[in-house]
Length: 68
Image (cartoon, rainbow, N blue to C red; front, top):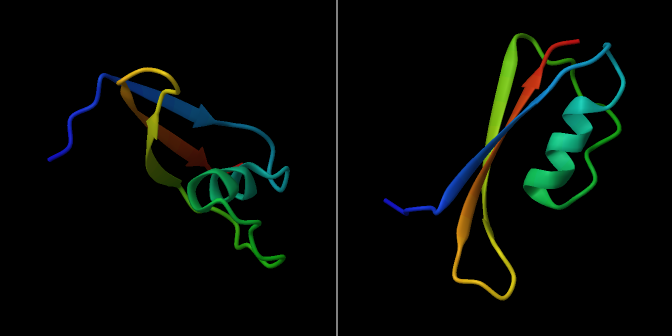
């Protein structure tokens, strides 16, 4: 299991159809999401490990995408 120096948790909340899911998709997969994203039902979660430039530090970013 990989160890991290820090964990950052981000919860995205807002009205329906404003782009929360698209933002999470873009960050997690580094690609633009398809034009036909389905509405989030409940909550979806994604994790990504990030290295901090010029330091030996690993950060885990956890994004929570909530239904609008």
